Amino acid sequence: MSGDINKEPFFSIIVPMFNSERYIAHTINSIVEQSYSDWELILVDDGSTDDSLEIARKATKSVSHKVKMHAKSNSGLSEARNYGMQYIEGQYIIFVDSDDYINIDLLSMLHKNIIDKYFPEVLVFDYAEFNDESNETGLITNFDINLKRYGDVVWNKCFKKEFYKKNNFEFNKGIHYEDTAIIHIIMALAKSVVKVEKVGYFYRRERFGSITSKSLSEEVNNRMLALDAFEENIRKYTQDTNIAKKKLNKMNYFLSLSWLYLFLDYQSISNRDNAYKKIVKKLKNRQIKLGIFNSRIPRDIVLYLIVIMSVECKLDFMIKKISRMRSLGQ
Image (tube, rainbow, N blue to C red):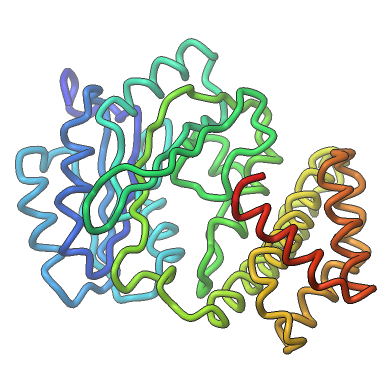
């Protein structure tokens, strides 16, 4: 860091890692080689049993003055992120997963937008997927300038520390899809959000041993648990009676949409098992109905009505058709 060594960094980058020896050097290098240099890296080793920690030490040796490295017993990604938060000093926070990497110009792009847009509370940038085996970049996810969609993950966003800490945001412990449970709360409460028109993050698709490789039924259950946590968070973060109804409606809308998409993504479980029954019950829940209808987004309202009608009339062919169209992005 140039200048006063006691100066607070502009960015704090939190990277939790667990048995990431295959990827962590690549992840760290994408941070160390940033074109913008005013940052700190908080590495949280979540009880790794491989050589992740030693590899991380070697990868950060040249910038050790910018790195805070902490080791703790294994407790999961959520707790590792929350743990890292207590050590940040930067004005803005970025979360990076230990098997992904960031654009070499990401911090530079973010800094320019932060200054030009008068220090917004959240910034959103596009991301691309890359293949675990070949490292070739695949699908690129672009978000429009109006941010009607912004991705249900935290790693394609940058958060103002003052805003983040004021609201006491935390990741829910003990669940997968932990981002889904909190990100729509954060986005609804943010007073200023800026879209950065660049791909800033590269997400590893089909990592060996990752949760995306687990069984369908387990993944369905994991997503349901995340949505249950999302619903709990709506209650937790809206206890203040001054929360605007518009913000609450936005949270409930994304909760409703998430249950609807879960149903369509996993309609193949429609053998009427317990998971299927729970999802259908949720779709008919008053909170879910209100969330969709209060959004006043015709496309989503129509989709919801068609799905509910198809469920009631047992029109499985219609549900399968809608599910295929969604998978094709139509």
